[in-house]
Amino acid sequence: MPGHNLILIALRFLGGAPGTRRGRTRLAGAVLGVAVSMIPLVVVQQVADGMITGIVDRFIETGSYHIRAMSRIPQDAARTDRSREAVQQIPGVVTAVVERQGFGLVYSDTGRSGVTLRAVPQQFWDDDPGVRRFLTLRAGEFDLLQESGIVLGVEIATRLSVGVGDEVRVLTVRPLGDGRMLPRVSRFTVTGVVSTGYRDLDRLWSYIPLERGRRVIPDESAQESIGIKIDEPYALPNPLVRRGLLSFLPDRQEQRMATTMLEIRRTLGNEWFPLDWYSAEQGRYISFLTSRNLLAFVMTLIIAVAAVNISSALVLLVVEKGDEIAVLRALGVSRHQVGLIFLFCGAGVGVAGSFLGAVVGMALAVNVNEVLQSIEWVMSAVTQRSVELFSADFYLEQVPVALSPLPLFTAVFLAILLATAAAAIPARRAAAIAPEQVLRRH
Image (cartoon, rainbow, N blue to C red; front, side, top):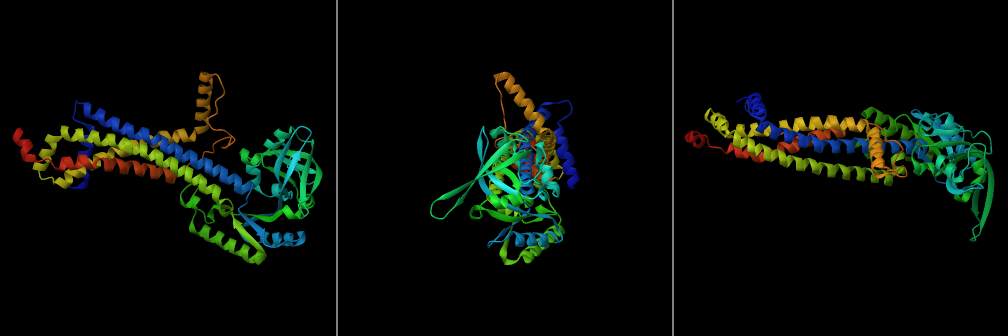
């Protein structure tokens, strides 16, 4: 019997006999079970991918750059600037800036905060659309043209109770080599307050002019590097793209960025060590992936439990359709084909349930911020206290909605596969029905 006829028979079995609803109600329950189990898996996948994408974007655009070249030997300012200019001319490089980093204590009359001092040129803000996209001005301007200007993260400004135009002092320490420390206090005026939307970064960074930073941040504790932005940062080798978390890129882009990376290494020579964005924060990104995969595994177990319901529903379907199976066998349908009919039944339930679950799950994922706000509002009204499901101390203030098709297709395929596998036992039972015994009873 042709395969399409077997599929039609499977669909007829799933539809139930005319005038009866018991079988259809039972199978509808199995479909609903698959759909309900699919919803949390889809939502977790999409929300986790959006969160990871949002955090990674903020790190590589405002913090670690796409590529950061670290000096292997001490470099004077003029030589570093010449190396930056040479890198800027490489095809595929969007922008390159010199940054000097060190630690300091920023304090005012009302508070103090330990910070990472980032000494950067005004070009860091003016010439980089990635920085302006993810570094939002909350007050003032990102103005480092005046020597005494400083731009604070919003958490630091809140802790110090300062705003635009207020004066803050920065304490840095130079080690003298014999256990003694030489403190230095520098005065700055707040020109702007910025936010990345991620508190781990907003409570950490303060920006000062590069030339002032070269004087304020001691050489002994400073780290001077060249921050490089390229056309396609995700084309650099990393497991995030290969696992479908962000987006797949054509091979030609990967080859082009590999060529750009090689040219950067050749231009800078052995005096510099270029480090791509994934290698710079590898431990953090591996932690993100591990948490996401663990959540997806737990959600997959829920689908496996729902598959048991499919198996029991199909076993009862075999009992109800015993006479029809016997007739099919008497008409020449083989045992193997009877088994295929019920495997198609299981696959049909899986397709219907996974499609329904995927649609509802994607709708929830797209509107996840509104859904979370509604749940928080209801819980706050019931408990009479403020409820925050996702603390901004550990997550983004808003979950980025970045739909990833590959995880969705994987979830749908997995649900259909488990539903089909759950039909194996009913299929074997149906294939074992002897037509002569059934027909003899009639």
